[in-house]
Amino acid sequence: MSYIKLDLEKSGLKKEEIMKYRDKVAEIHNELYEKSDDEKEFVGWLKLPTNYDKEEFERIKKCAERIKENSDIFLVIGIGGSYLGARAVIEALTNTFYNMLPNRKTPQILFVGNNMSPNYLNDLIELIGNKDLSINVISKSGTTTEPAMAFRIFREFMENKYGIDEARKRIYVTTDKEKGALKKLATEEEYETFVIPDNVGGRYSVLTAVGLLPIAVSGVSIDELMKGARKAQNKYCESDLKYNECYQYAVARNILYKNKKMIELLVSYEPKMQFVSEWWKQLYGESEGKEGKGIFPASVMFTTDLHSLGQYIQEGERDLFETVVNIENTATDITIKKDADNVDGLNFLADKTMSYVCKKAMEGTIEAHVSGNVPNILINMNKLDEENLGELIYFFELACAMSGRILGVNPFNQPGVEAYKHNMFKLLGKFDN
Ligand code: PA5
Image 1 (tube, rainbow, N blue to C red):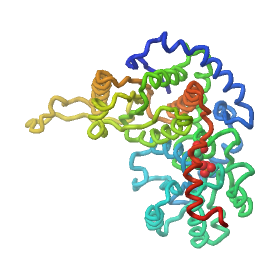
Image 2: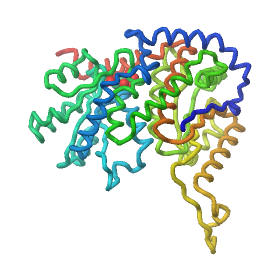
Image 3: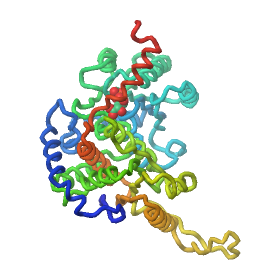
Image 4: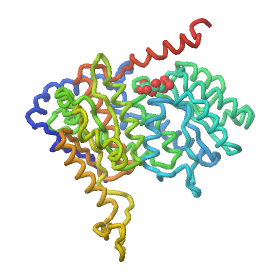
């Protein structure tokens, strides 16, 4: 069973304050739904959990089986929205030490093309050694420098290792259906190709082939993930703010921002959620940070970061609020045993489970931070599995679109990303050739 529940009790916001946005929310909701079937608008993700390409979905599953059979390593080449979602789901739902597990039945999954470090690439090549591998290169534009560089290197690596014909069978491309250098190359080389729909932007694309192929290779059920997202699509299709918790989250963060809470800290107590936070930061940062506006999305992993950032959160600048993703039920647990000598003084925890101790740490932390004027938004999630995560992904995507529109920006473009690229290309002489 899955559920995501929003709790605004400790946000310091009153219901009436939130409900003032009722008309605005309904207006934006209708605008989003009106655009959802338009190929030219970036709102394709809205109905994706029901409208997805069923044929391609089955082909993804078959392809994942082939990769599992013939590869020790699966390399995912992509950056930003073209890798964060896959990594988030895989790390959240597999063993924390997945890539190091000796008896794993699925390939090691490694991500590359998301930085420009030669060390990273050389270290990776050393790690691959003689192992069998397959590659999934993912780029919607097909021209992004980091994945393009990595792919050039690994294409040659594959051709040297396997010969051109076998290399072709081990390279999978996820890109636009017709545009871009990658699409052209894929057609020429006859690589198996998956499509990123025109109306789904990079950071909203985890439930397309962008996320689904790597996720399926890891053994995580993409059927269950989509089921959770579908559940959320049905649950949050209500235009009335009063009954839509997803929109309430969007409104709450906007009110807090107006009250000079400029930074949102996404908090988790489960290290498996690290990359869900990274995915969330990109989603909200790229969608909202524009025109001199936007909440700065940051994240912390507790209790780890209570020992590094806890002091600042409790007593530093008062421009923070926290959104805690609380996973209510852990998959496994450990009970602390009683020790006859009690030298470490821990017998007050005897017979208690670690998950219980962690819950008390969370409750105590929320109370402390709220009393230190850090408003709290709580998102309760039943457990960490495919269905719940699918629901959470959809919840955050929809809330992000609503929140960006309330803020008055276009949550589907990213014009600011071009500035650094222009300078970098100029310095590298791209425009002279
Ligand atoms: O959300 C976005 O659109 C971006 O973060 C892109 O995903 C990222 O820049 C990678 O782009 P591409 O898939 O075209 O290589």
